[in-house]
Length: 337
Ligand code: PEP
Ligand code: MN
Image 1 (cartoon, rainbow, N blue to C red):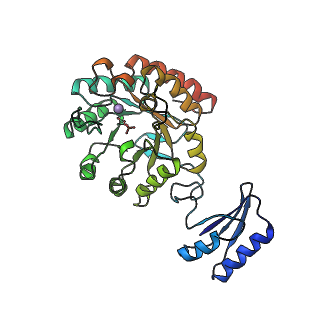
Image 2 (cartoon, rainbow, N blue to C red):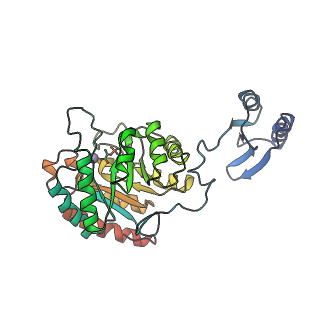
Image 3 (cartoon, protein in one colour):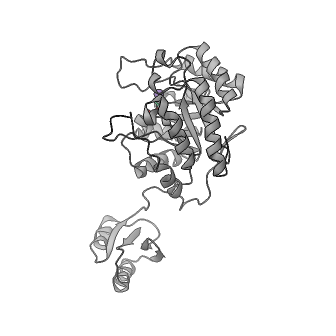
């Protein structure tokens, strides 16, 4: 268990709490840092002990797990996680840029986009086969045939495939086609799905829930990792705020906050983060400047005719400019595209 003391706690109060912990048969360790005093013991303690300790003067908080996640925490692993998939490393010096259509609409578009995405310097092809649409009457995706298309187009161009898994029943089937299973924003709290993705052993990209705090997001990552899958990539894709001029508010500050709390790599998705094509470039620059390990970008040759998310899809020629500008920013902080 842990006990976080008040910032203005006195030594006497700390000694009293230490005495109480010894009384309960525990062997507390005192940790002093610039954030204050924390007392730790091995293992968990029952509710009764936590209640008694919480009620003591000078105690701010007491609980069994702090931070409320373990495996994604920097405290658990100090070194950055690097995820190697074939020739690509996610979380290394080179930024991992994934680009492609929101939804796979037909073979021709995906094969053409894959060539353009590769030529622009991306490492992976994105595309939805199973779409989490707000309305059941909206385009739901082409399913397994879209996965075959993605795999074929990616292989022809030496790209990785990242695609969203919506349903626990699809996980095993999708591992045959995808290099990275994307867990979408709406599914961040689908705990059986998180566990199943964990059990699959496939690298997973976990998007932040639309209304999730960073701690809730990292706890969702723990669901995947607790099943033995450490290859988790986080993706900040914007949260719901009172602002109506953008689809979501891309929380750029989440990037350095997550970097401090967790060793997992983090991407940014400025397409869903803003909902606006002309904001994708500036927010890509911002995300990379803030320390993102890569980007997830929606691209469409005729965005006005897209079956989903056309308003936020950039054109292939805009991706080339984006990659060039982002590379310039990356070099300033010792990275590259
Ligand atoms: C997507 O990437 O196409 C998608 C549906 O994203 P999100 O889960 O962030 O809405
Ligand atoms: Mn989309």
